[in-house]
Amino acid sequence: MNTLNLINPGWYQISSIQKEIKFSYTNAKENAELLENLYSTTIAYFSSSWDGIRAVAANLAGIILEHTDTQRMKWLDLAHLLKSLQVLEKDPSPTVQLVATELISDICPGRALGE
Image (cartoon, rainbow, N blue to C red):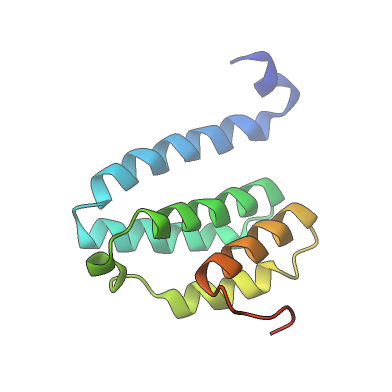
């Protein structure tokens, strides 16, 4: 365990989750069921008690969308993602709010603030 893990043991867990998700996403790009599972698991992390996990999960959802082609996009529930991100826009953590707002603006570029 490195020094950062001793200072913030939660960082080790976040790092492990990121590695697992990267591996899963690489395999999921060609498998609809895995992609859906990764996507829904990522959104489930939006309700974590750790703001760092919520922010990373929102970032990951954006990365998944960015790297998913149009054909595979139909497997993802974008309406559920948008509703979940709208909840994160009201998160107590400014970092989580910012990530959610940026992702919503990427998904819906013409959306006015407060919609």
